[in-house]
Image (cartoon, rainbow, N blue to C red; front, side, top):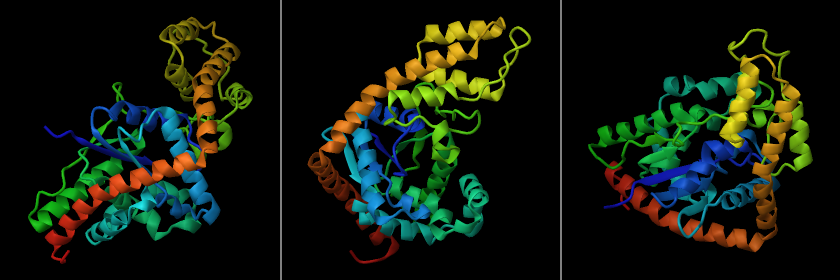
Length: 332
């Protein structure tokens, strides 16, 4: 029986952070032996923010190194650069022909980007969901590891797949399903007390996988907190719940229970919590950081992984695109 096909990627906007790790990389590693996996570096997607030519390859290499450091094995899964697969761009074109302005403008992430940067509302930003759909459908993926913020995009992928199948009377594309961690889809909060961890919340609120221990400690100790609980067992405000969410991500269950009890009996000292959180963050990140540094220094090794992934991904993508062109009515 054929394995389910998994496809997902990470956009190269600099170094990966803990949100990327828990929202994506950890699941990628877990899946590579269970499924037929295609994991890519989404360097086409980065063009919506107009990166410099020199940064595109460097950022892509950094993401690839993080993939490998986290435990992805190019012999057990397919790892490739999105830009090495021109079939994705062609499928993106076909999908855009049946994507409608109203549905694209209603996408939550698009509306957020328009508010944040009204002077850069480009077509790539508007059609981001169709490029994401092309990434998934080019391999006819059946499962997609996503974070909570990407659930709407995946729903649109299913819409485009079903629309294509219906328009052309085909069953070419499966309707991919979201798959998260065993505990469900994960969202890692930023250190500033609001939003998810990521560069959009600022570097001071984000723990990168390449951060030195001293940098991690400084960031964590400056994390937003409050003056402390005033009543036993009171509900935690957002910024405190975020600290506990981070603690649950990197600390032991015993540590989480300890500080939860201190909070509930109104004896918690946030300085102690942050110190423990910083220690546990460093212990978690440091092995990854050291491995990323080693991999980045081996540029030829990274290039070999890219080349291997390009060939494997191309075989899958060509089969899909040949079928798409035949079904639409173009000759091969």
